[in-house]
Length: 476
Image 1: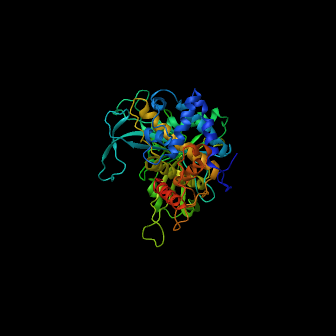
Image 2 (image 1 turned 90 degrees about the vertical axis):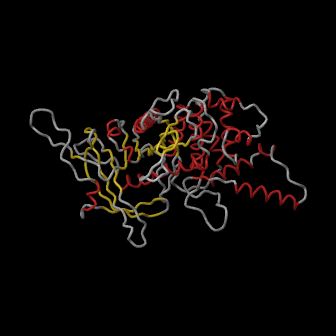
Image 3 (image 1 turned 60 degrees about the horizontal axis):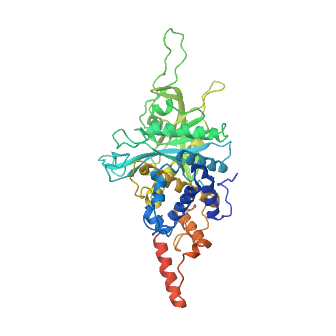
């Protein structure tokens, strides 16, 4: 097993990527389909412009070939997405021990569309508009489940997408095979799939810890939570909480809830009971003051006790400190063996892992702004969804191969320019640059590489023009 949190000497990226793609061979029935999938992935890495299928095939030198078979990868049932995701999860198990928690993050994201007839599209609230005057956009909604490696000593992690499930509203354009689904329903289904996939891989004893925002602290999540799965989710500052019922000798139906507990933000005024710790998050040491309250219950889920984590913020008037609002987290309690409900893991570990939930937001930004999610022009009933899911899978294997080869540190590729030495970990742009350098150095690319001029001065001009154009085309 390889531990990505331990700094190691960087290894080549391309062999790791090819091994990962070969491990997903059971997801396709025919070898020629597997070869096209590999070719599409390599063309995706070499393309500079928009990542439409046309541009990717042009990057492969197939401009004059027949493109029908390539488009049928998405419009016909050529790729089994269920097996594809199961193979991907199995490949992550080599980077985490069975005694450690399997850390996942779940969140919904929207993929902007302009068509009003594309399957799965509907009018949704635009996330880029202010809360006091929100707007709408035409988009497809997906629920994203990502695996998070345990943070390195410096506090770095990465989000590796495992599943990208449609969560289309009831008013969306019908999509065959994808009935209307609410966000919490798709989230619960993703957690149940994770638990089942780990059991099938022989990790029955490994527990799952899911990180979510406020959409995953509703009663539906706590009621339908799968066994051996814990959830840490944000909650509102005015959330109604209740104590556990006390045993009573009265006749009749036993009480499901106890007395009303203080609101989460009411604990901020307490002077005692606070604990202090320091979290390592993305190269920074962050002092945190927190408290643990509970167990408690929420309305509609009397069978699942919860704990409340209250994290103090930092006043904006404090000098030389970054402003931080207080945060409130609900944690599913562990079933008691000897009488008392407990946290699934220590509170300090839960807070350190909860801070890494932001990595799924980083993955959303990289997928949409850099990797070309949603750019393939596939609008059929099947391809409109499968092309999106395949793009997320391609991003996942690219990032997972980077974690295997480079770990969670800086990586061997230096950032361009002398004014910045780079952050504490590699970025998608540097990872992409590393792939392209190795691909262009392969012998197979020499057959199609243009020869330079014979004169040295002309050769220098030729190399300078192409190098500058290559560096300027970086989108990450």
